[in-house]
Amino acid sequence: MLSSLPHSSAPTDTDVLIVGAGPTGLTLACDLARRGVPHRIIERAPHANDASKAKTIQPRALEVLDDLGAAPLVLQRGVVDLPVRFHDAGGAVTDRPSMSVRAAESFHSPYSDPVWVGQFDVEEALRRRLADFGGAVEYGLAAVGLEQDDDGATVTVASDRGEQRIRTRYVVAADGGKSGLRKLAGLPLTGETYEDQRWYLGDVTIAGLDRDHMHIWTSESGMIGLTPLPSSDLWQLQSPIRPEDEPGEPSLALYQAMLDERAGVGVVVLTSATWLSVYRVNVRMVEHYRRRRLFLAGDAAHVHSPAGGQGMNTGVQDAYNLGWKLAARIDGADDSLLDTYESERLPVARAVLDDSTRKMQRTTATVTGSSGNGLSTALAGIADDVTTGLPISYPDSPLTLHSPQQHATPVRPGDRAPDANGLRRAGTTSSLFDLLRGPHWTLLTFEHDGPLALDHTETPHLHVHRIGSTPGNDVVDTLGEFARRYQADPGDVLLIRPDGYLAARVRAGEEVDVFAHLTTYRGLGARL
Ligand SMILES: Cc1cc2nc3c(=O)[nH]c(=O)nc-3n(C[C@H](O)[C@H](O)[C@H](O)COP(=O)(O)OP(=O)(O)OC[C@H]3O[C@@H](n4cnc5c(N)ncnc54)[C@H](O)[C@@H]3O)c2cc1C
Image (cartoon, rainbow, N blue to C red; front, side, top):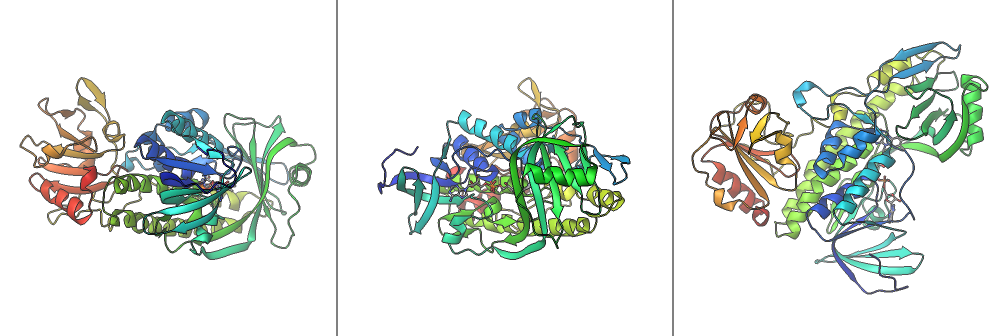
C-alpha cells in the first residue's frame, strides 16, 4: 500500500506492478495473488469503475474466471438469454432470439452460454476474489513516469499526496486504450480511427420498460438500443451518430430527445444517468507486447470495434496467459518464457481486430433505416464460435511440443483442454476442470499403470493423475467422457499448462522428452 510521504522518492519494492484496475489488471492481480507473487495494482481513478461498458462475458473468459473463483458472482448477477425486441418507426414490434449464441457442443465447456452482465459486475467479482487472496487495488495513484534498466523498472506514481517512485521487477500496463505507459515506452498503437463510427453511450434508468428484452428502435436517423443490465435498474443506451452530424454533448436531455424522435414522445422516459459518453471506433494494436521489463495487456495493447463483444474478454485472457509466466520467471524460469506471451497473444489480437472489423462493417449499413430487417440479420451473425474464445489455440508456440508419432486427435498440442465429466477420485465424482483448477501444471496418463519417469518431480506445481476405466486407477473415467473427448489410447500422456492449454501429448516413456523440452529448452524447471 502507498505509505504516505509527499514527494517521497524512496523505492517501494515489489515484483510486479500492475497499472490499471480494469478487467485485465484485476485478472492478473488475482492470478498473481493466488500464486503468492508480490505485486501491487494501482488505479488512477479514485474509486472502482461504475460504467457498464462490456455487457457480455464469453465462455472462455468464464472458464478463466472459474479457475480464479470469480465465476459464481458473475453467473449470479448475469442472465443467459436476452431476446431482442425490434420496434420499427411505425410502432410495429418484432421479437428475435438473443444475439448471443451457445458455443458448439464439441468444445465441451461447462460455460457454453455467453452471459449478459455489466463489466462493473465482472470487475466486482474479480475485486472480491482479489480480497479473498489478500490483495487490494490502490486507488487514486496514476503512473506518470517509467525508467527501465537491466534489473527492473522504476515507475513514478502521482497522487493527491504527491509523487512516489515504485521500484519493481516487472511492470504490466493494463491502463486501457489510451495507455500512458505504452506511450512512455514508445510503443505505437498502429491502425485506423473510424471517424464515421461514433456512438452515443450511457447507463440510464427508465420508467416502466420491460426488462426481459434488449429493445432496439429503428429509424432513418439511426437505431437506438437499450440493453437491461441484469441485477441493477440500469440500461445501457447505444445510438450511432450519423457521419454528417457533429456529436452534441451527451446528456439525459439529448438522449431523451433522440428517443422521443425515434420511439415516439413519452414512449420511453429516461429518469437518470450514471454514465454518459461518446465513443469513437479505433481499430489499432501494438506490434510488440513487451519492452524490456514492461508488458502490455488488454486495451493497452489492442482496441477495436465492440462488434462481437471481444475487448474485455481478450484482456482477461491476455492477463491469464501472462500471470503464470511472470510467476514462473520470478521463480527462476528462463526469461524466454516471457517472450511467449507476445508470440501467443499478439496473433489472437490480430484475429480479433479482423473479425470485429468485418462484423462492424456488415452492421454499419443497417443501423439506419426504418425497417429492422437488415439490422436484425446483421446482429444475428455477430456472435459465433469465434467470439466464444474457445477455439483459440497456440499450435506454433515454442511451448507446444509436437510428438513425431502424434496421431490425428480432436485435441492437439496447443489446443485448449476441453472438460470431461464423471471422473471418480477418492470417493467423489468431479470433472477434469476440477482437477485442472488452480495454479499448477497437470500431467494425465490414460490406462497406464507402469512407472512414470517423472513421478519424483511432482511438486505443488505439477499434479499427476492416472486416469483409466477401471477402479485400479487413481481417477476412474466412469462415463468414458475423457477417453472419448481426448480420443485417448492406453499409454497416452498429456501435459496441460496452468492456463488450460495442452502443452504435449506423448506415449508413456516419452514423458522424459516433454520435461527435457520444457526444462532445458524453455527453462521451466524451477516451477516443475
Ligand atoms: C459500449 C462498449 C461496449 C463494449 N462491449 C464489450 C463486450 O460486450 N464484450 C467485451 O469483451 N468488451 C466490450 N467492450 C470493451 C471493454 O469495455 C474493454 O475492452 C475493457 O474495458 C478493457 O479492459 P482493460 O482492463 O484492458 O482496460 P480498461 O477497462 O480501460 O481499464 C484500464 C484502467 O486503467 C486505469 N488507468 C489508466 N491510466 C492509468 C494510469 N496512468 N495509472 C493508473 N491507472 C490508469 C483506468 O482508469 C482504467 O480503470 C465494450 C466497450 C464499450 C465502450
